[in-house]
Length: 280
Image (cartoon, helix red, strand yellow):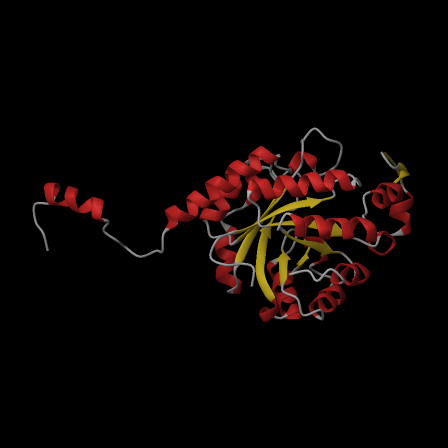
């Protein structure tokens, strides 16, 4: 089990590499230097995930004139993931992916991932949930754009024993503070009795800190080299120096939370003797 008492911190590279393995490696190194436990990618078989109608629509990008050109341009293949696997081993950082279709589940399986992430849009895809579960690898379930009924159904399909964390998420990019609904982290744990986490899409670190203070045991945020870079997720991401500061503060918060048991510390005793008139 790679998730323990400390918050397990994941930097989602996702598609912020812009189809360039060199950028991907820089992001992996930045995540490691910041203190992240893992990096996450997205893997899709483009023709399976999107309709032909959607793929044929005009959309200018670095890669061409259609939505298909964009999605294919952002997708890494065998060579790139072999490089990612070697690079992550070199820097001793965990990597995994959210797989949006069965072919992608099989593709990532060859690299022996420590876990799979079910992306929020895939939560209602029972066929994909069952297929991912069949690999007998722990699963993190993201819950953006989903009702409690849908979350409950997905948990039943996957099986509680196969889920190591369910992540509160609002699938807006970037998410406004009033859309974060962080207090639901407490309700999520209460309602489903599983460890909970938080998937962030806001570029301010304060909300990630609040999520950890509320009990998130997995924290995922998008990472970018520069929010001004081209790409749809860049503005919702943290830059490397922000990620480093966030993780420093998270580890301090974890120290401050303690064990939930009332204690009198030695440094308090001296003060107590001076200020407490009656002792029991």
